[in-house]
Image (cartoon, rainbow, N blue to C red; front, side, top):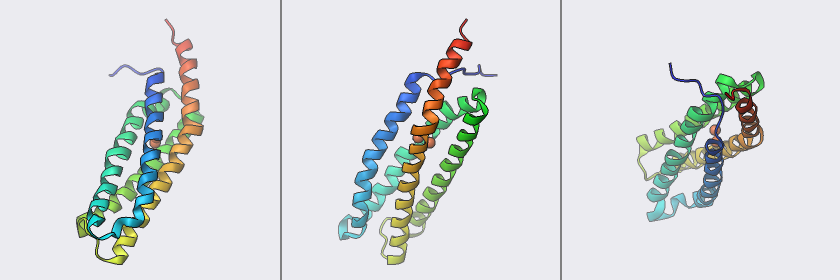
Length: 161
Ligand SMILES: [Fe+2]
Ligand SMILES: [Fe+2]
């Protein structure tokens, strides 16, 4: 069995925090660009950029957190940290499900969305993903990460040889 991790390294937590700031900045640009999805020749480009952005940023960030932070919290965290982690896992799933719906639009219609109804659905889902991600990252920044950094201080002391 793999050796159990007993704390979260400061660098691991810092990387997740930096991911948030980076994603926030890029998302703001994306949010501003969304109304221009149907600006003629740029349309398919913008649809592609939107989906690519979510795929390249959100998905790897979630995997990173799940493997490096959630796994530790669920192994050695106290009950309240475990409960917060479970909520955060569910938020990941909700956001990823929205992303699946977004990709399904591309599978069905390609990158040029001619139908107004489909275009509205695409923009609506993109806005929902942005909103859910911002709320989720705020929950992590305010509730989860502070608990984790305290946990590592405590466990560093407890497990010192
Ligand atoms: Fe997360
Ligand atoms: Fe996060």
